[in-house]
Structure formats: C-alpha cells, structure tokens
Length: 277
Length: 241
Image 1 (cartoon, chains in turn yellow, purple):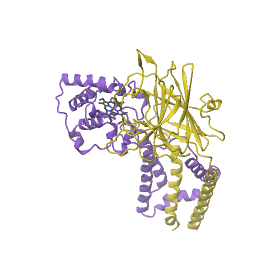
Image 2: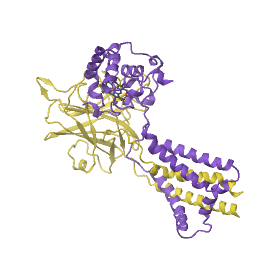
Image 3: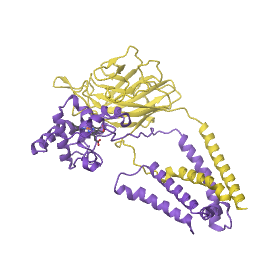
Image 4: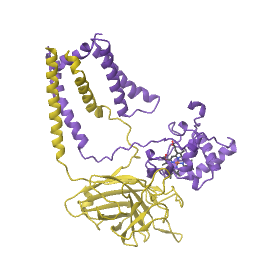
C-alpha cells in the first residue's frame, strides 16, 4: 500500500507548502502599535569616520531620519501640560568602532538652558523608561542617559535607577555638540560602541535595543526657565539597532533550501511511482 | 466518498473565510499564526477521518498522487504540475531569504494587555454608591489627572498621548474597560504601568502609579466617572461564571 507509506510524507509536504505560503496569504495581521510615526532608529554602517561633533556634516542629509512624537511629561510629578518640542527626527551612523546620533527638532529660540537627552537600558535587565523607576513585579535595571545642554557645551554621561537618582558617571564616555539655526536644533551625540564601563549601554551591531528621548526648552518666561527637571518633552521606549556588516552566507542557505526542496520533490515522486507499481 | 479531496479543499476554504472574515465581526481578529494552526488542525482531522473510514485514503490521496506523477495529464494540468515543481523550491528559497535577511523591523513583541491581577485585587467592589454627586466628582478628578493622556472624550487621544508606546487606553473602545471589572481597574489605576507583570512589559507603560498621589476614595470615584463618561459599564461577577 504505497499511499499508506507516503501518508506522512505527503502530510509533511502539505504542511511545508502551506507553512511557506502562509506569511504571504495571511500578511494582513493588525499592524504593531506605533502611532503612525517611526518605530526604530537605524545606525547606518559606514566605512569612514562618523561625523562626531559635526551636526551639519553633509553626510547626515544622505540618511533617512526616523521621527518620533513627543509628549509633555505627565507621567509623574512635577508634570507639565504644554511643551515646545513636539517631535524629533533621529539619524544614526556607526563604523564598527564609534557611533553618532543626530537629533533634529524645532525650537523657536536659542537659549542657554536648552537641553536634549537620549536614554538607554543598560545590560540585560529591562528598565522603565521613566529613569528606570521601580517596577513592582519585575526586577528592573538602571538606565544610561546621554545629556547635552547648550550652556555646558558638551555631553554628559549619566546613570539613574529610580526617580531622583540621576547623577553624572565617574567615567565620561559621551560627547555632544549642538548647532541652532533658524528655529532648529541639531544636536549630535557620539560615543564608542563599546566602552567597557558597566554603567553604560554597550552597542553590538545587529542587536536590537531600546531608546527614549527627552527635550527641554530653556527659554526664560517670566523670569524662570520654561522647562527644567521633570518638566520636559518625552517619549517612551522605541528601538534602535546598529546595522550589522553584510552577511553573504545567507545566499548559501537560500541555495541549500532550494536544493533540499528539489531533492524532496524527487524522492516524493519516486515514492509515489513505486507505490503505484 | 467520491471527491473527498475536493470536499476537504472546500472545507478548508470555508474555514479560512470563517476565521478570517466572519469571526472578527463578533470578536477581536485572530492572529495569523492561530488561523494557520486551526487550518492545519482541520486538515489533519480531515485526513484522519478519511483514513479511519477505511480504504478511502486512496481516494483522498489519489488525485494528489496522479497530479504529482503526471499520470494521464495533458495541457493545462501538465503545465500546472511543472509550475508546482518549480515554484515549491523557489518558495522555500524565498522563505529562507526572508527569515535570514537583516530586517529593519524590530522583533514583534507580544504584550499581554490584560494580564491577571494580583490576588488581593480580585473581587473588590466599589464601596461608594453610584450617586450623581460621586459620578460628578469622579469625572472632575478624571479631567484633572487622566484626561491629558486618556482624553477629555475618554478616547485615549489626550494631548500627551502621542509620545507613548503603548498608547493610553481608549476607554470608549469595547475592548478595554467594558471587558474589565471595577476591581481590575482599581488595581491598574493604583499600581499603574509599573505594577504590571513581566508579560505585560511594565517598562514600556506610561500609566502612572496613582497610589502615590491619590487616595483610594478618589480612585473608586474616578472609576465611576470613567465608566459613565465612556458610556460603558463594568463587567460583573455574574457574567464571569
């Protein structure tokens, strides 16, 4: 009884065919929750040096930015209901050694207290986007914050684990430069991908990690700085990844897959023919 | 049992249409992986059914076997056969490529939206009476504390909603508070995003932990105001059983 024998083979075939076809047939799953903006920042791989310290380098304009909406920080006190920076465009580059990220955002006035920050999780522990605040059922980790303020004229490498714990690190690994022009800030942060410092995010090409952003409009309104401390524009976690080097072994696997499938067809046919005899 | 293969194909197509298009009219759409699983199960059942009903496996497999071997084929059937033999390896190759190719899309995250609450928050009932006054007070507190994210219209579209992923819940959607009991809301509002278990990814949630700012009484009244304003009513114990 040939058919009895090939029963499982045929079942396997059908499952493979439907399994392979399923992603195209069923590709209409609800899209991920992304609110219409970008979901991830891509650090483009380049051969040359990354444009650290140069927010206006021409090469930045060759990169398609990711764009993230920002909210007034109303998650914890002290809150703020209305902020200046409504969204940010983010571009990134790395060369296997160093990385640079450019934040571009609208702010009508250039002020000494204008500031921007990028936040990362450190290590493998998940950390809450609000300064790694305590979670009740999950043991969280710390966050690494790269902070730039116009009047400092440099970047500061910071750590936090919980509200009111933020402080500058002993080991400073981050540099930052800002340039304001016609109502737009362009701030570039840079750092080596790996720092060997346990308090820092370590960036491995090919690996997805989380990232969040914050901005302060330092304009003086009625004698006080408009946005400072927890009164800022924020995002929650999004993603970023340093582009991995191209991997040509993929094509080898594709050829292998085709060969295996063809071999499978050949033996299946032989089986059925034998069964029929 | 003539045409058992045809019957099975019709069954599968019908099943697909049902799962994909008809079911979502009544409930949330099924994820593709689940639809695929159900179809695979249906197919396996059909094959087992035909095997069990004795000898008819030949009829079931016969057309497939004849098609694949090309027995007595001419014209279109022959072309189709060759097409299948060429397309299958290409499909496998393409599938291998899309699985391995570097993607700019971060890995899909399956966040559980309504995880089980801790035991101490199961079965509590609102200790405050649903009076006009209490509902009004709850709505006032909602406007002050919740509307920046969840929106003055309870639709999750407050002025601060845009920066957050996941977005603030839309209470007028039948998929949120209408599915939940008041005691569940009491837990979520008191403990906030950071109170969620790991499968709900507490590190991503912007929902504040209100117990540090609001007394329980206010939270219970906010719950009343929230249901009233959103035009929903809480799920009750009776419906649960």
